[in-house]
Image 1: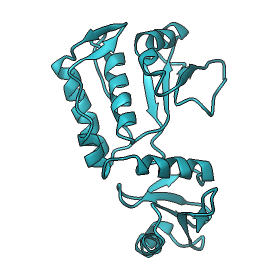
Image 2: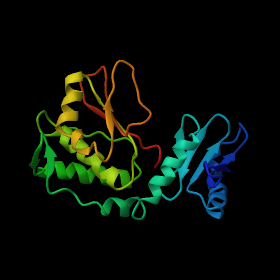
Image 3: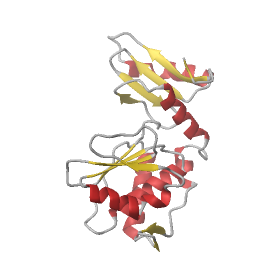
Image 4: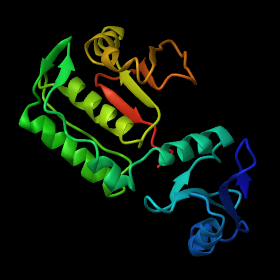
Length: 219
């Protein structure tokens, strides 16, 4: 059992021998977790690792074991939700308008369709999503609205927003993210710099596309 910084139960680790697939120990580990009770289960045989929030979907492979601070952040998020994942999404209405470049504008129907599709994919257990939109159809306000809703629903705690040019990252900051700064602090990073504190981080990629990585490790 892993404990938080106040010595309260936080997660269960089910350890198996190298020759055993740890995923097969799900039912046994869930019984331990529910008896404590804790939200999270880590399945491992020393080489393969899985993280499982059994109330929100299936166990998924992870590259390394999460830190105590990471698990505590995820546990805190769950305490602020309004029910399970689907109920938490339903509790945050789709916007009738949003701010973009300092103005209040109404979303287009296809932008609302994108928000609904993103919610449906998340509720179905998807952890990778690709949203494809034509030039000048509002990609940045659409994805930032997705981010805002998932913050409000208590589903995510950190976001990495990548762009291939510093001008695009600054434009996203000025046009949309500045409106969120009071609630979810953010920063602009480049040249290999990174931050462990801010909730919204904008950075640069080497490709010609905007890319958003939602930190979904707590799900």
